View 1 (cartoon, rainbow, N blue to C red):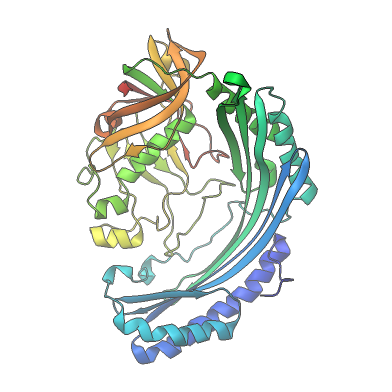
View 2 (view 1 turned 60 degrees about the vertical axis):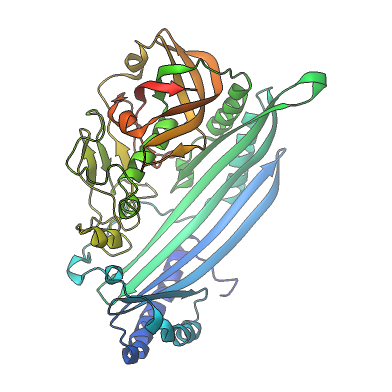
Length: 465
């Protein structure tokens, strides 16, 4: 691929389509012609192009400017119950044809799998795609990206307890994808993703002046448009506050107490819920919700829905990668399991109808409860407000939940200024799922922080170790 071939901006998107569409058609035609002799009856060509730029700053100066691009032609050939997938990293037709010639001979030795076939043509969406405004036609200026990173760093180091900023950077990625298949798939889309992140280190001097108590804090933001990112000062301050808060953390009392999950911690927790209803866990028989369709699996406060049509959200889409239309789904309603989260292949293996989630959920939302965050906490005499869970164990098979965490002490119905850390939250997921109470503060979509937006959540009688 020529180094001068750019896919950035509106012109880059048009350039990509002009190149990718005839290439995909030519590769598809060759695959079907060449494959007819060995039983190929279906084929799918996917062409993905990306171009990324990233800047990082240190001590007020730009220290790194990274740019790169890729162009991948992925080919999937089908022969009855066999599927052969391979790719080339080049827009060259001859290279793709040579790869087909080389790989097609392996079809005979591939195990049969009837669940891998293309989506039935009658389920392939052929209606209008419209726009969710997830593509920024003009790239952000280099000077604006650098200035953003500098401002994050500058705000963080205003905190006197911050020792240094480990990283402060912004990236921009242009994505283009085109899919052409013998079952009727014929679509292309372009999108952009802007990411900003900062990591800082705070320090508390130890004995003899040694810096033996270092804590790290971070903050980030993602959006489809540069101007939708959170203000850089907001991220810089949050990263510094998180790091410094950990310096003064004490270990809370051990025992059973109510815990209250922040939006961040709630996202982590509901991600475990989604793992428990995911097709992978079901196929592995590794979920205690395996046979719970139509039953109460969470507290009656909890409704979880997936909304694929949110403007400017990175995850919004009309069609999944199998070609099926993506419609809104309610996975759990009033605590009752309505739908498993399955890909096309998983649905076939489990004997379920496909749900248009071949790539997973899109914009997941835990609907708000009925009480304010203050009222949710008001009767807690002693408890813990969880800012974040750290790595630990959350097993959807046996239900074990054991995660280190950090946050703030709750006392007499209020979140106190006293930070807490060096403790483990432990319990049984089956009990925790049924013991959820939600505040009414679910963040709006699209979110620049969360792939799952969830309200402040309370869980009673949780073991603190």
